Image (cartoon, rainbow, N blue to C red; front, top):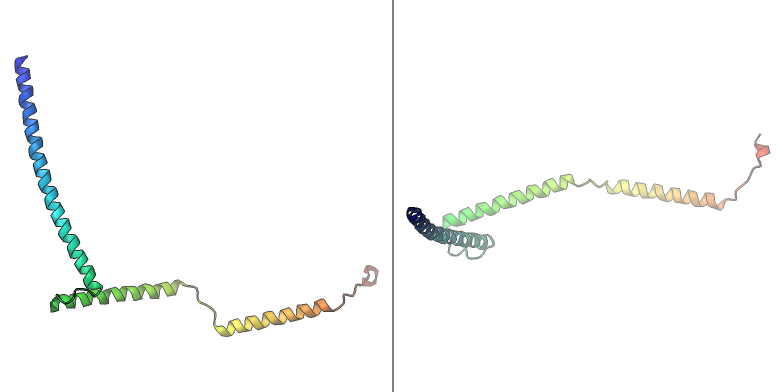
Length: 129
């Protein structure tokens, strides 16, 4: 029984040591991960400011050229989207067709009013035969 308890204590102490080492490694990983993410956020924020035209004084010629290419590419994409969006919109009929339709509608309204003003002549059924 004593041997079993010794083995248990030995195993328990080994497990605790491994957990402590794992926690220490885990903290290092988190610290490194945090530093990498913070650097990435800083880089993205700087790029965003540059794209908005801010803080471009510190850029060298190569970086300015790259920024210009990014902006031109973005503009091309937006223009293509706009063109594709217009193609999907229903095409309005020309103004001349709308005017013609309006005139036809007005003539029909006028004829309808004239028919309503004329007295109705009722023909008895026996006269139709």
